[in-house]
Amino acid sequence: MMILGLVRWMQPVHGYDVRRELLSWSADKWANVQPGSIYHALRKLTEEGLLRAVATEQVGARPARTTYEVTTKGDDEFETLLRNHWWNISEPADPFVAAFSFLPAMPRAEAAAALRNRANLLRAGVESMRASLESDWVRNRKPTHVGWMFELWSARAEAEMSWCERIAERIDSGVSYLPAELDEAQGWPGWRDGVEPTESE
Image (tube, rainbow, N blue to C red; front, side, top):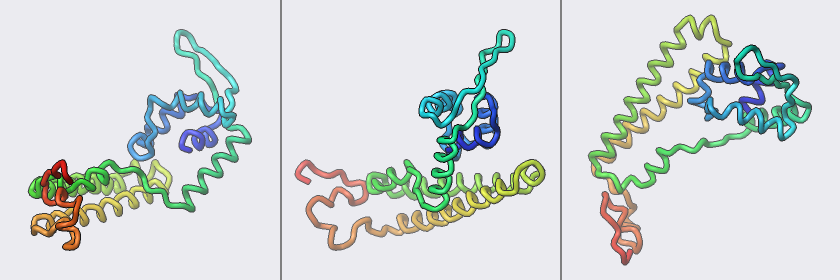
């Protein structure tokens, strides 16, 4: 959606300018748009009929540059994607959630320390975003809604910081990872505080 939307906004536009704009937005960090994949994505969107190449030009020894525009089909697809993401909730895949699901495999002290470290990393990110919000770069050189996005990221990070610190305290306190009903149930003993399950389990 990001590449389609930018072409729609900037058209007619070269792939180089799309790449530069996405990097200026740091989209590689929050929208999973990798700089190296942008030209491939432009070609793929063209093959799918969502974009059309309107010109290809070469200046001197520089690589040829293709200029793109959005097709009617591309306009429709962008509108569909835009509203889908506005009106629905989609949870992004987070590798930490997968790792946290195996909490008992970590020694308690290490798990608590890792959660506190995660909170500290999030705190540093929030402080950086707050500084950006106060900067001339955001206040006077970016659209107002960019600052609003920073506020959203800060609020999410602050909520996760509190959660990390709260769970670290519970782990330190020795709270059991299993409800009493499962503590001795078949198949569950291996989920106790880093205990390796036996072959019979």
